[in-house]
Length: 75
Image (cartoon, rainbow, N blue to C red):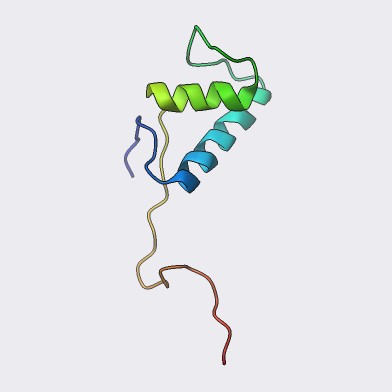
């Protein structure tokens, strides 16, 4: 896995990464941007992602799984 620094293209991945970073900020981690427009941890995390200063890793999908990854009902 490689560390990425630009915002994810997928909205779902963006929200997951921002939420994880917001949890870190709420636990006491210092912000990676000095001049933030917001004070709430979620908004600070979004600013970090949009500015490209936050590094993250997305999990690699396992081969052989369904595209949706869920179980299907038998009809």
